[in-house]
Image 1: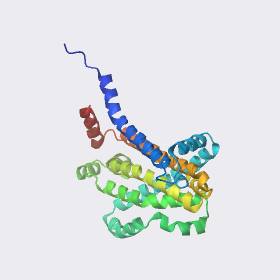
Image 2: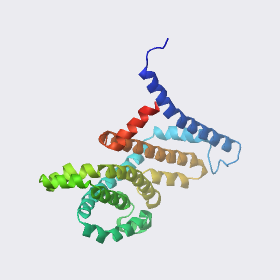
Image 3: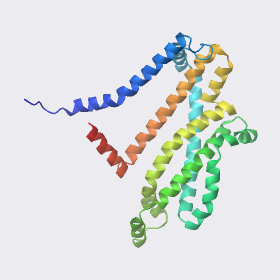
Image 4: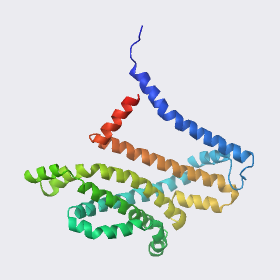
Length: 277
């Protein structure tokens, strides 16, 4: 006799299938790390054991020094990302609205997009010093150009039928921008923001590590300069930076899923998940 269908059991089974493999991979990597350091394949003066690093991480988590550094990193990250996003949205929408402006600026955008933000770091340090403003400028510069391109192509990808319908209905100005242009460009902008969030975090850590601004990067540098006795703490800070990246990526993915629930890409993703169950 066939029993009743239990959707909760299927949901738990599906969640385990998604969560368990990554967890097992992490456990395997940690075990290999411990074995390689304990057996002296890697010297502990260069690469601390997994257990000593986890102990240093535990001590750091209860220390205000770590959370002050995380706060400084996130402050530069969010301010730089907001500045770059607002500028990219305004400039990109204006350039995309004119074919002449788009063609005239395309070469300039490509040149600046190709310049690594780290390459201008020495100049920025000379002008702004090892400050929060230096970090924010570096993040804004590095994130702005890829976001600008996403906005331009998002606006220019508007369905001609939608554009013509808006024109016939007399939808113009700010209203057209909010109810026609932005929904059409939203998938491109959402993808750009998700990618830019990680780029902004990387630039924040680089600005701290190389430029000396307060944050996780500077704490990594200080621990490295403290000698082999502080290497476990250095790796603990590196792990924290990695987890920050994972958390921010997950957060932006969740926001994209919620905000873009109406879009075809999200509907297809939900359909695929349901069929995978």
